[in-house]
Image (cartoon, rainbow, N blue to C red; front, top):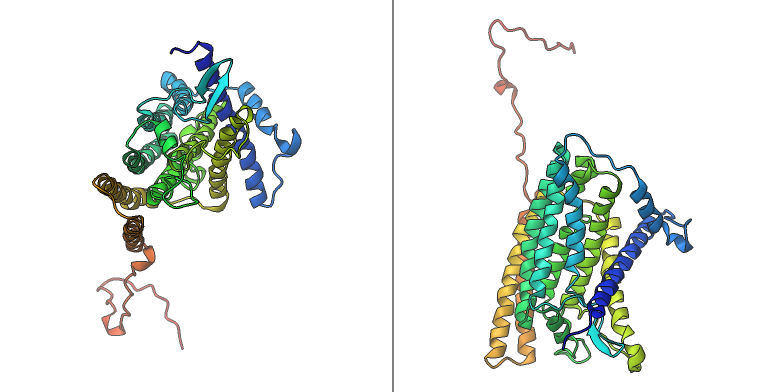
Length: 409
């Protein structure tokens, strides 16, 4: 049965407004939390606890003079920041933020589009976001922005592979590419009594790979090599100002919210949670609350990383992606496929499955430690200089002057 036109419009407005609200909360919370970590006060003048400072900064950015350098490729220079914002908005279209809602006799779910290939949609839009950063650096026709754009392209592509392998484990374990199916599979009780059926438990290595990859994918500290101000002035956005620079900032913060929402959906059941026996007229609010709280946990995780960890060296960043995360993600994808195949052919007792999973986790941990040890600069010892005897000292060539000062005893 076709729904009236106002239903999809309302779904889109509610979902996008919900994410924009969380993004505004992120910007304010990051400034307050990092200020506390650095023994500062942070924004506290405009609104209660400085909560309206984000709105004021947005208005200031909107009316700030927008300069366009003469050496840039104007078309691509203008389009690049828009691509990042559009990709951020579209990637959240398939993520449900709540359960079913009944309004004016119509029942619908708080999601813009429940696509049958929803997970592939998320990965595809994440890949498009790479173009925003790279094109901004290339179109600026300046060395430092170009270096930032190239860094970002290599970084995002590398960590997208690791993320894709982690997501593949979820797809194999669920047997579906539809995001709503993944959420529904985690809404019941788990295989251990008293623990939810969240995928973070059986797919914990994939969860770790995805979390590390999402920090690099969002370009956040300690993986913000594309805009390392100590090396690249400002990175890919050096030549931008005004609202176009503000769009890059908005895209970065939206990426944090989007990645937090994705990891909550894939590994923590999304909006699923207890309703505590509330009547249906109120119970529909609880999925919204659960989703908001879960997302806020990972947003706080992003903020703590920014305030607590120094920036990675670029070669270390690439080594982590190619030598650690991708092998771990590939191995765990095969382990997940093996477990699913065994379960389909008769299954194993719960204790045996837990034991095999623990053994696989130990093997992966050993691979991680071995890789970290092989890359440890302290493990490579420099050659010890050999003392030179007086008899082995080089003689002064004939006719050459020895300008060494002779010191009398």
